[in-house]
Structure formats: structure tokens, C-alpha cells
Length: 360
Image 1 (cartoon, rainbow, N blue to C red):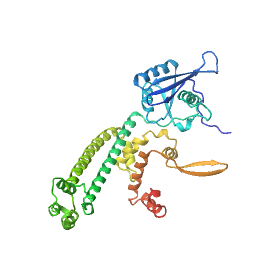
Image 2: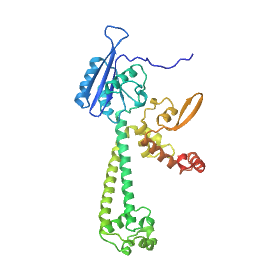
Image 3: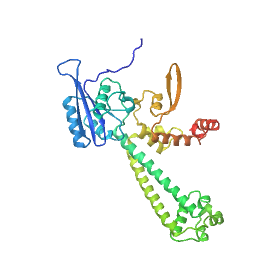
């Protein structure tokens, strides 16, 4: 026999929430007042407004509740979790897949709340990772920045499609159509200049020898219709760029308390300041939450799932994890693949036989 690290299975005073957008069901289970070994329970419904949640918190306090458990239902759990956490309760967010109701049992909101309370009081569930408030705020900033960058990229792609529609082949000559020269030419097109010779003369520096090619590329049928749409697209790109710059400043301020962790992450091949900010926002800085590096990899869903049955082990592939973390790690891997390091060499070796995506 071996000793195992197990906590006490019975939580004496527990509450469970079945959450919805407008209402929730709360079940409280406590020891019986006069019959040892027996339990008492009560189920009440509450609205999800702040005042109603405060009334629920007062009820929990009167019952002496020490732990509140809720399923991670969409984003509806956030308001109740954050409020109860601020009121001093130990809150557990659990994966709905791990606390599913058993077949044959009634499937109602009240029954689900009771079932979750029974599961929680016996220690038959485990809490999901919920970061502290500073990390949550940083994560909302970095995720919104990435969303805006994607929106800006889509708008830039629309500009290129519009130019192709007008037979303007500037992207074949100019590397960055949104650079200084590219914007000058686009502004001139919007202002009504259609002469390719005049437009090509705007070239500066290294593009001067390519004036003939640029003139040929600018020979098309750009009309006022294209100019109207192009002006709107460029305005959107400038607006998004300004918002991204504002977010960069806010993120730099939010990540300032984690400067030491930023320096450590930036020492990793392929990790720059932006990737370090996003890694801190997604994983946090408290590594004591993960018993080992393997546990962290498993939590991030970057290892294969193993299923064993009848003595046979089957690899079920990798589970679906956070797309935000996956995008950051993908960028880091792509950057590392272009370096003259062990990781870069390993990427190129795997890519030759298994493909680039598998290598990343």
C-alpha cells in the first residue's frame, strides 16, 4: 500500500450555482442541526443583477458557507465569481464536462444545482485555474489588442483586393504598400491623380531605379468608385493603428509589476516583448499552481491525450486548448525557426519530413 495525498472528502458547508444569463439557481448544503451524519439543503433562485447577487451572498454568510462551486457556463460565471470572491468566499470554477449529471436523473436547473453541490461536498471535482485580478486585466488588454491587429490585417487585405480589382499592381513592386511611399501613392489616387507617370515619380530612395516598373504597375482603371472605398479602408486602418498604440501603452503599464518575469521570458529563443506580455497574461506568474512542467503543458492542451482500456493505450491526439495561447506559442515557434539555434535546427529537421505545421 502507498500513501496518497488526498484532502478531506467532505466539505461541511457548500453552495453550488447553476448559472444562466438572467437567473441562477443556488443550492446550499449544510450539516443537520440535530441528527449527526445527516445533511440539510435548500435551493433558491436569484437574478444575476448585482443587488440580487449581494442578497445571495448574505444568505451564504448566514448559512456559514465556506466554498461556492459553479460551472464555467459561457461568460455568465464571471459576475457571480468575482462578486463572491470579493465578499471573501472560496470560489471554485469547475469544468462542466467533469460534473455532468448522470443518465436517468431529471435535468432541470434546480436538479443541476443540487447535483453540483453533492459532487462538490464530496471532493469529486477540481477547480479550474482563475487568475488574480491583475492578470485578468492584463489578459483582457492583450486579447483585445490581438483582435484589433487581426481586424487591421483583414482591412489591409481588403485594400489589396480593391487594388487588384482596379488593375493596380503596386504590391508587385512595392514591398509594403502601407509604408511611406505606398501611402503617398494611395493618397494621390484618392485625391484624383490617375496618371501613372506622375504617380511613379513619387518614388524615393531604393525605388527610384524601379520607376519604369512602378509606372507599368500603376497603369489600370482606378475610378472614383474605388477611391471612395479606399479612403474608408485607410481611415479604418489608421483608426485601428491608433487604438493598438493606445493598448500598447496600457499593456506596458499593466505588465510593469512583472518586469522580472518579462526579462526571464525574453531570454527564451523566439520570445519578444509582445509574446512575453501575452504569455504572462495567459499563464500567469504563479508557477506554484502547476506541480511540474508536464502539468503546465497538459493544462495548456499541448500534449497528446492518452486513453487506456483493456490493457491497450490509444493516442487520441491533442485536446483543444486556448486559441489565444496557441497563437502566441505559434508565433514564438515561427520566430525561433528562423534562428541559428538548436530550436531552429530542430524545426527545419522536422519540417523536412513532417511538414511545417507539425514542426511548429
